[in-house]
Amino acid sequence: MAEFPPNSGDLEIVLASDLGCRCDRALDRARALAAAWRARLRLVIAVEDDFHDPSWRSARHHLIEQAGADLAAEFQDDAIDWTLDVAAGDPAEVVMAAAAQSGARLIVTGVARNELMGRNDPGRMARTLMRRAPAPVLVVKRRPHDPYRRMMAPTDFSRASELAAAEAMRLFPDATLTLLHGYRVPFSGFISEPANQDEMREEALENLAEFRKRLQVRAGGREPLTALVEYGSVEELEADYVRSHAPDLVVLGAKRTGRFGGQGAADRLLLGARCDVLIVPEASQAAEAA
Image (cartoon, rainbow, N blue to C red):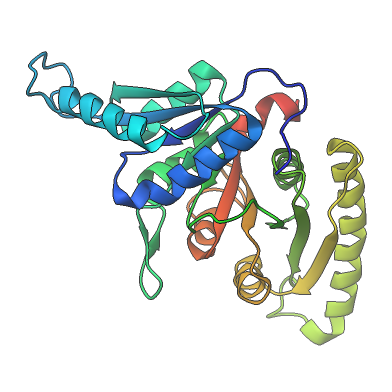
C-alpha cells in the first residue's frame, strides 16, 4: 500500500469503537491504514453512564483502565502511534468532535449488525456520520486481509459524487476505480421506454465524458480505469455489480438532501453493499467545494 499522502506531515485516523468483538474488523483496518500511512491512530470511545463519578468503581474508570490495557497488548508488536480518548456524550457527537479537533483525515467505524443471511445494519452512529462528519467515513464490513485494490463509485454526475470519487483516489492511490451510472427514461408511464432508451443512454454518455474530465482535473491527472453506464436504478446496479465484480470498496458522496442524501438512496446504498463503504459527507467537502 502506497504511503499517503506524500510529504503530508502529521496524519490522524479516528477509530470510533467500543472495543467489542463487533469492532475487530474496523480496528484491524484502521491499524493497517495507520501503519501504511504512518499516521497517528486515535481510538475514541463514548460513555454515557456515570462519566463524572470520581469513584474507582465508575464505568469510566473501569473502561479507561481496561481499554488501555487491552490496546497496549493489541499494539505491543506494532510501531503505531496511538492514543485513547474516552468522553461523555452521544457516540456520533463525541466522534465528530474528536475528528474536528484533531483535523483527522479519516474516520473508521464498524457496523451494528452484518449478517450473511440476515440484517445488515450500519447503526445510528454511522448514519449520523455519513451526513455530518468533518472527514470521510470508512465503514468496515469485511475482515481486512489486503489493501484496497478495486473501488466502485456510483455516480449521478453531481459535485458531491465528483468530490467523493476524487477523495477515494487520493486516499487509496494504488486502487483502481470504476464509475457506475444508472439511467432511466423519465415519465416512462407516459412515453415509450424502448423508443427513448437509446436517446437517454447517449445523453448519459455525454454527461459521463464531461464528468470524467472534471474528475481527472480534481484528481491531479488521474482518471478512473473504467466507467459503466447501465439502464436501471443505482441501487439495483450497485447490488448487481458488487455481487458480480466483488469490489473491495464502494464510494459514496453523501449530501444532506438530494439523490445520495437523506433517508433514501444513501442509506440503501450503505445497507446494500456487502463490502466496505467509504462515505464522503457534504460537511467534509465544504472547503474543497468552494
